[in-house]
Image (cartoon, rainbow, N blue to C red; front, top):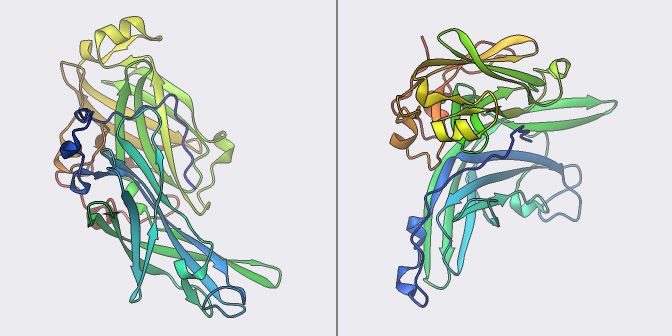
Length: 346
């Protein structure tokens, strides 16, 4: 699961031209629907077979793949998103459920989390091994007789065996170490500046501070989940923490009419630094530059077609608990789409 603490988050998507009544020729084609890369989340679930499951024997185990993502662009009539998973020579294609993204025009959330039967998973007569899964996100349309793949990727998953008495269960975890050094910044006009960081393990309460030239200009000591004592690096999961600094704005008008401290980035260009505490220790450091107009876009998100309004920033991971693959982002970012122009602090 992913646990996020965020206040009034609004992801902005460029509005598409309105369709004229009856002008079907302008309907959006599947090729114009894109995936917002920063929203893709692969999962692996596990379960036990029963004699009623197709292809299963008593005592067999099943590994179920799943995925969630958000699509940019209005889906045309008849469009059905799907996800195809491949591993060990076997292909599983599952139609995705869909839902609107609250407050965002022409963006659709898709989800594949079906573990209702073994036909949507891999059957193992013994322990489930670690492995690699390839996936494709596609859209087929019976009305236009088209079927187009719009995203391809792959992910590794690992396992942990848990013994309880005489029984042994399996937890599966998609390895998302690539997420840890990739952070995001964005602003909401009514509230303020957001910084997004990822943690392997339970981060507990995260305290976030913003500095300009070494001087503190803003903070939020209530991010993450719970408090400092809830920090647990052994927790078998990745956590996204979206921390909002209310009152830190990108323009003078918003700062004037907003919340305290009514801080205007455009009036204070220069070098800034986020410092995040987790478990009472310095865990994450992010440095970025604010331009004279209050913007802080470094061009990385645009160059890599992120599909989101968020700005990508390198994260210095100061807390190496638990241990993680520090090179994973070089090949594994966004499940096989490494970033161009992205470099970690030396």
